[in-house]
Image (cartoon, rainbow, N blue to C red; front, side, top):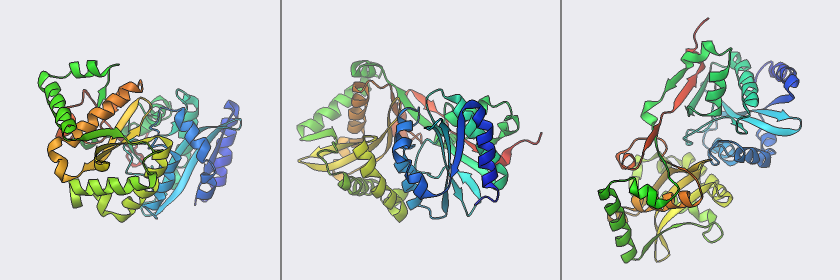
Length: 354
């Protein structure tokens, strides 16, 4: 708890009142929980990922790490919630951070192009700096609201050295055309032949790749199927199945996001049995592949290829333009991508003395 947090809140409110913006800092999860509906409404109006920036993802993160204390900076214009900076205080390291390492993109939540609110949230964040050992914010896109606010801030020159690229976590992605035919025509002849052959073989053997429907498929069963298939594919190599708190997070989060339509599971089905599954998170411009798994007995069918194609078709049919493969440039991703997004992190300890 900050010794003079009351002073900070009052000072922020006074500064923002000239612009009709009021700031508030909340640290109590019970009070934060009351914002759930307004939080998700703002996410829908933003350029943030609908799952990673959701209230559910933020709230359930505290299942994983008990050393985290909630800290959320809110911005109001009149009585409307127009900005959220969802942070956590890591007690062990005495740092402010985004709470979840499981989301590939982190950001402040504001309406598209509402940069004035972004600047006010950033000012409040910088006011908190002296009360913590450092501010460490990871997984920032170059076009994120927070990156744009820092880049535009006239007083942020001393923080220019705080940015560093995280090259080991590059994110391949595809800019999609308006039709699946145009997408396939952009690929090589051998690529198209391989897709056609694999889809034909799967169909002949009675396999079908479908987007699961929360009105039909029991949402509470989704985590169990995902973890079973993920473990079948990777075993102990994956922390998603070996770390109990992460399993608990998945079990608590997936059913809610599935019902809300911000988490989309594509499954390889055979005689009503789930043999493979890919999880996609809904972004403002398209779908983002988060993780997956499959039963070893279907490995020769290339379930990853089948679910990628089903998800790409769905993305195009939704009128969206991006298929994001998220963090990691694994070989299986690189044969699909047309672009690469480099992530950065902000570490206030690296600031330059002026």
